[in-house]
Length: 635
Image 1 (cartoon, rainbow, N blue to C red):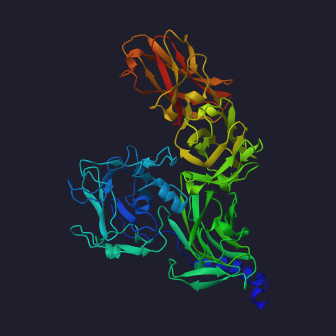
Image 2: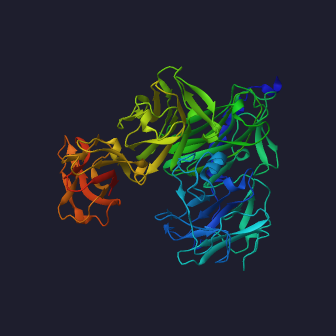
Image 3: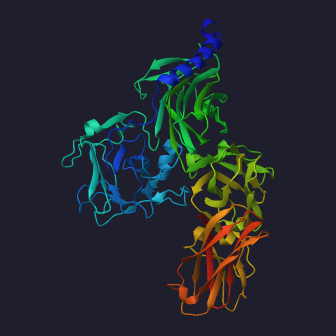
């Protein structure tokens, strides 16, 4: 009983210490910096993975230059000599890295997600895109003029080489038995560890001193907080060589009451925007079905939304093994951030550390959300091997909803990854929607019929786009209609610079929806000469997404005839119910550089905050016209 005495007094004293300690010392508030070099660096390498190397390897790069760097013509790989047989890959066109930013190149986006609960910035293996990977991770391109092989890091020794836009080596990292002229190799690390550059912006060409052994790799995580360095209401510090700092916090059902095993750091490290915090935990009993631990992120003395996650004993894959559990949070630049681990006193619990990094995509697994119908199922094609299923025997109601979390302002795309048991069903099978609970952001929804799915029992993404302008917490929902079995894997929320409206999701007074493998989503709107009369072939969406300001609307079109000197289409921006000026551009046949190839045309406009916005394409019945999408960018 003495071991379970109330720790209230210690808790109060601990809170008082926060004020004192925060004034004098700071722990783990990001990677150390040294004198700045003026070129990109390889900052971390994970080569000897805990699972399948071909799925889990990754490399992190870092920009210390003081300015943004265009990556379009940079390359990275493990072939140090041009013309030899290992791999070299070019970054995709338009990619860039901001000053003081890290970015991750992974072998496989899904394999990376299985490790860290988030997606990388780039991936090398794109073979599973739109099959089991709907993450929209940018694909690296094989740079065959340097080498023709594939990147595969040899555990016994290899090199990572970073080339600039002139194919000049700007950085080379060597480990174990690898070799590169003028660079000393790092001795290597154990399976599951990474090598990390420390300080992150220092380069002496001696990898044995430039890199350190990381027990807990930190891809894209700019901050790491070790549990033993901060505050705890219950539990104690113990030692363990499998932790990064050699120590961790532990709580036992035999000696501790329920309470906070960890809280802190009360730091202002993170800037505004979306972040992931990853907690490293373990338990001695993964058979317990009760809540074992709650992790949360709280904006101390600020208006940021509190987010939390309840974790059951059964959520741990194995006993006495460290496991990562993540949370998404929107950082508002008020107050400080507090991350906490609550011990429920039902199983023994250990806490090592937590890592925090900025993200542009959040993933909500269907089985982790709230439900009014359906059940969890094992599915080898689903992320984490589980999904949420509603069958025709289940009630007609919301099969999932949540997460009731904050979201940073800006343009977002919400992808519902789902499959239907029968894609010949012409009736409604699912309605997906976006709802700002307690806020004024525009409600969006899409009704899906069985025929909207390309195949039966095959996952595909179903997109909704919206602009986040207001406060309130976000809810993403799927309403089950009962006309076929429906399975949902997850919901992926992706930050976008521009907001896109797919033509097939808008309205049309002429023409129809067609299939086109080169169109976004595989569908477009098409109007055919002699079949469809002249009229508006696309209009809508009558949206409030755009607030007052200057914008550009870009329409993606193609034509069957680029020889006509007549007008073939009109693109138009119209403020329905408002006083905003109508803007448009007449498209002539000769404006198309090629026949039946997609081309973009733009119209600038000023939005006044009245009425709704409508984006339109008029078909003149002179040439076949197809419309893929219209994209809106704030200038």
